[in-house]
Length: 44
Image (cartoon, rainbow, N blue to C red):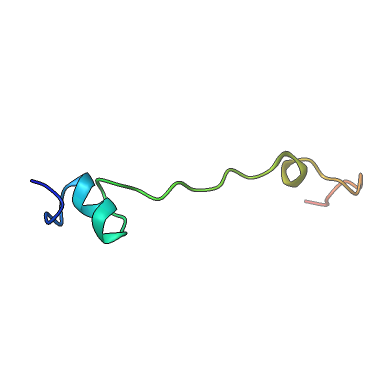
């Protein structure tokens, strides 16, 4: 359980990979994208 271990968090950091132990941080959508900037109502 260390740097050489593929399944541990430290091993993922050492290899530079992502997985269950070290998931990628997803970008949150910006406020501008949530609010309709153009001001027009979108038809349903």
